[in-house]
Length: 117
Image 1: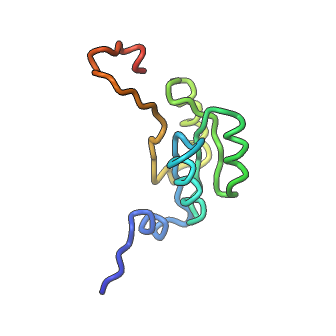
Image 2: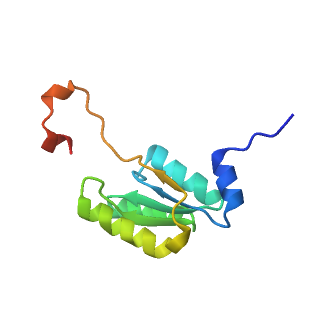
Image 3: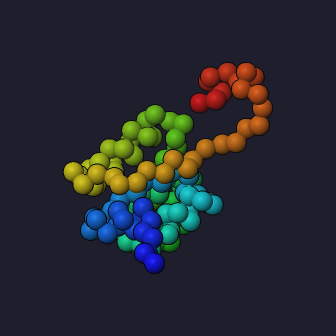
């Protein structure tokens, strides 16, 4: 029986040290994804908003680079984009996980665009 290879394994095998950017790494899926990828040899830029969360992320694994990131701020996103581009150079980013977000339960017609952003 042939062994199945996941996308994460395939990219890791093809690259010496692949790079991921993950938003929303304070807790939950984002944090665990950052840790899992770092343990598998990836360089991970893990985005979070609070300084306390960033400090904790930095202690999880040496492959995790915490980055102050507020996805609702264009300036914050641009700063992290530049930081990552400067760090990885032409090798680029192999994986982007847009995990940050909010959950609001209501009909969309009751939201104004400014509140949604």
